Length: 440
Image 1 (tube, rainbow, N blue to C red):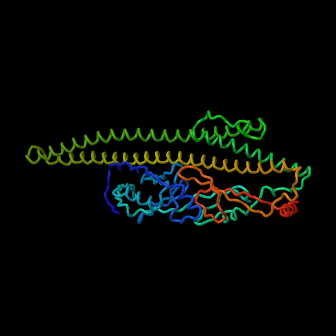
Image 2 (image 1 turned 60 degrees about the vertical axis):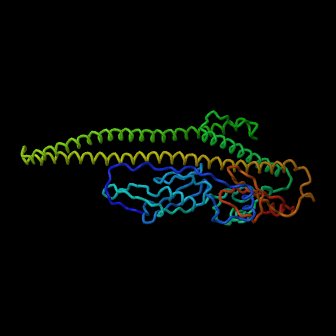
Image 3 (image 1 turned 90 degrees about the horizontal axis):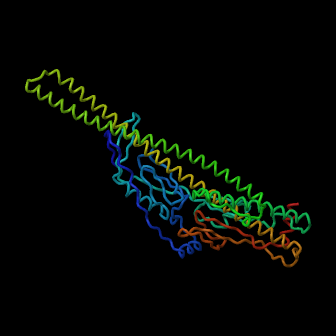
């Protein structure tokens, strides 16, 4: 890294942007990894992963960055890079290559501008955060689990509090009170199901910026029209508040950027006029010196002429510094505006994902209770009940941009960002009785 202790008065060239790189990952390799378990070094960067960029000898320039929903990472003054599908080392090589020879402005405690020329080798990129695992279904605590390399589905179930069958949520004795409990549970699940569907609709309409997107219909839910209308109205109010806040933020950025751009234009005009004045003063100084040397003018005139030239140079210097500072303010405003849009999209995507998980859990609960309600007058409690509690594992994983549903074993190693669905398959009569006794 080359450090130049030289004062400058011109803006640094615009940040370079790295062109997009193609990614390739076939489904066969994904299935192999699902079976055998990936090595930690093979984890590709995906949206939601966090990295740490460090510069040797320049700790103040180190920072964290998150891969956004589009697979890009904003490395501030180094530019934007497509990180999706790359290893951290591969991203590091790309950043080093792009940064080699780049000039960066820095300010000291006195506000003076210095330049730093990078050679690329001082840059280090390392992963310091994984996308979480999302676990749902028949577990005690659904939601996020921090990912760690080599974690298995069995360990994820343990971290989620173990298996919890929705079939065992209530006393299974078939009597009117039990039927009422099942009906109440089904009604609660139906309300959660409707809430999740409406929330998915609201977040999707915000992401697409489509306010005319039709809301869910009564055919999609199991609640009354009045309840559905109330849920839709609530989400519309939330969307309206979000839109008002977003419009305010965007107006702020637009007004601030307009003011900065207007000031830049004024400073550029001043810079041109002052440069002309300085050139004229320098010509006048040269003319006076020539007259003095030929004995045609008094020597005292040179002091006044030089004083005028120095004053013009000083004013030009001040305008150039002000112009450089205003350009930096404009760059930061544009970066902050882009970061705001990215964070807004990430929040909406996370809300929609949470709603999808809630929708799936509510659907499973409704299906389970519906089976009990349908079989309440049948042979529950007889030999038809199968033995042993067991559960199946289904992994929902994005492969080549498409969501795939993969059946897995309990010892299957998971990947960052996996969604894991746990389903209890078998329940014994003895276990049902024991659970009934505990819940009474």
